[in-house]
Image (cartoon, rainbow, N blue to C red; front, top):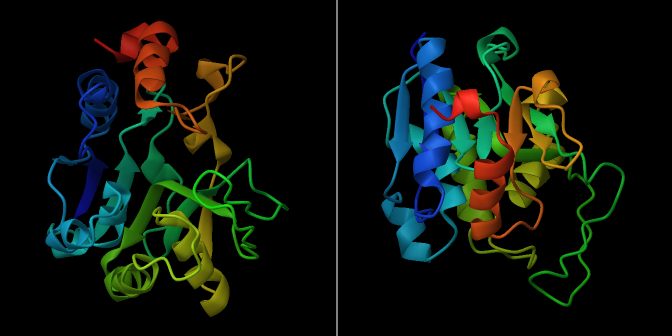
Length: 218
C-alpha cells in the first residue's frame, strides 16, 4: 500500500516555515512520504474558495493508495505515536471535534442565519482516507463548494453531512491526534496539537513559537 501524507499549505506564509519543521520531523521519523501542497487544485481556484477544499481532491493530484490529509496548523507534539498504528486504511479516519459534540452548529462567524448541522461530528483538519473514496470526496466537493446551506466556505460541514446522510462508517482516531490548543495542554500526552478554534494566523504563529515543544521545531 502506497501511503502519502499531504499538508495543505496554500496561503499560510506567516507560520508555514515553523510548522513544517515539526511536521517534517514527524513523518521523516516514521518513514511516511510527505508532500506539501502549495498550489490549489484548479477547481478550488475556479470557485475562489478556501484551500481546505483541496483535501477532497487529493487523489486527483497525487498517486497513492492511502492519503493522510492534514492542515498546516495541526502540528505533531512528539515522536511517541505513529499515526499508522491507529488508522484503518479501508475507511475514512478522523477525530471527533471536541467543541461540537451534541450541539447545533451556529454559523455566527459567517452568516447571521442560524443553521442546524444534525450530523456534525468530525473535525477534518486531519482526514485519512483510501483511494476508493475519491469519488465520494469529489461528490461532497461538487455539492458543498457551492455552499447551498450557507454553512460557510469550509469543507468539514459538508463531509459530515455526506457521512451522516449515507451512513458511512468512520474509523475514529483517538482525540490525541486532534487536540485543540488550550493554555493547559500537556504536550507529552497528546500526539498532534491543532492551533485553531478562532485563532488568527498571526496568533497561531506566536503560539507555536512560544509554546510548542522546542525539540520538534529543530
